Image (tube, rainbow, N blue to C red; front, side, top):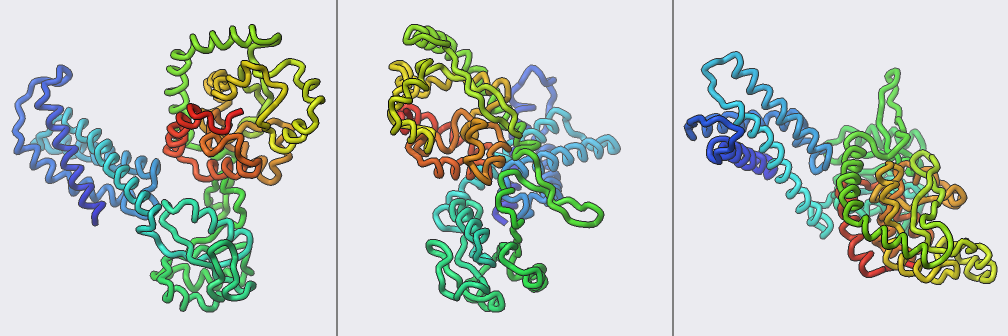
Amino acid sequence: MTLLLGDAVFLALAFAAAYVVRFELGLPIFEEVAALPQLYVRRSVMLIPLWLVLFALFHLYDERYLLGGTREYAQLFYACSVGMMGVITFAFFDITFIIARGWLVLAWLCAFLIVGLWRFGLRRVVYYLRRHGYFLSPVLIVGANEEGRALAEQLSHWLSSGLHVIGFVDDERPVGSEVASGWHVLGRIAELERLIAEWGVRELIVATTALQRATLLEVFRSYGTSNLVRLRMSSGLFEILTTGVQVQDVGHVPLLSVNKVRLTGMDIFLKTALDYALTIPCLVLIAPLMLVIAVLVKLDSPGPIIYRRRVLGVGGREFDAFKFRTMYVNGDEILKQYPEVAEALRNNHKCAWDPRVTRLGRILRRTSLDELPQLFNVLLRQMSLVGPRMISPAELEKYGKWGMNLLTIPPGITGLWQVSGRADLSYEERVQLDISYIRNYTIWLDLQILWRTIPAVLQCRGAY
């Protein structure tokens, strides 16, 4: 009800803003036409209910799109567009229906922007409250195996999803046994009805790999159409959450179709637009600085200015990532004199003190200025401003089962690993952060990371 009333209020504000822009500001792009405010008040009173009905028809009050980010905006755009076309069609057939085309176009634009901003603000407030323990739905996970634990841990990190895991239901583990830190087995599957009532459970999430087919079907028959709880079922392959899947009906058989890449449609469009919008002006502004650094690198030690590192991009395609050279050209020979450092580099791919790094190189690494040439990789669409760490072909096998998943999205100049400690993190922690980024990607997450990168770079946290 709050959302419906808010939509009505902000639609009224949008139509009023359209009237002011069209008739009050005297913009030269519009003809001087006298307009009665009362006429457009009546038009607005008529159009607001129409727009609200369209919002409902386009599922903008449906849980699937509610608080759904880009999907919600897409549905909002379609609803506003259909509304405008409907009014134009009606005016075409009814010549007594007077309405200025300029106002109508502005009303469409203002409705999309203003209602979109209202819903964005509401979503931020709801997410904030959820992270602080409000508006959370109690959830039971059916199945306490590795998949069930992974689901619980993932949901606990993202309370903004609105789900709060209270425990597990499992037939294999003893009741009361601890599955993970803070979570226990609360009962058997046969006790689900009692547990739902006792704990006020709103959702059941089934870890499908933990249940026999007969048990799984029984849970589905009992709660799949229940009005008391919502039933969700895991895919059974937690790793594919880094690529994304779609349910497709093939020959009347529901099949999971796995995307080859993580970003598709609007996501890849917005990410690419953000990359170009920031990279191009940034390169223009820092061109003199890059020229100075290039001269200093050449004067500091013999060798090329740019170091090309062979890495893997989306789908495993190899490319050269550019950096200002920060090491001596005979670095491998120098490293042989320090076996302890060589061992640390083999294990973590980073070391606080690396004898191969030049004097200028230490400064460039400390300030992250050595990575500026990677902006050209972004322009070539080989990299993104934000993404997982770059992986070399030699490193790929060390990532184990997650290796190919990390290649479903372009590597980034910065990322969660950059703003969470960078080289101070263990190798396992860096991998976990990359996987978390891929699973939970949104354009807003990219903007957050870019914002947090500024203090991380200025404070030189974990950079060496």
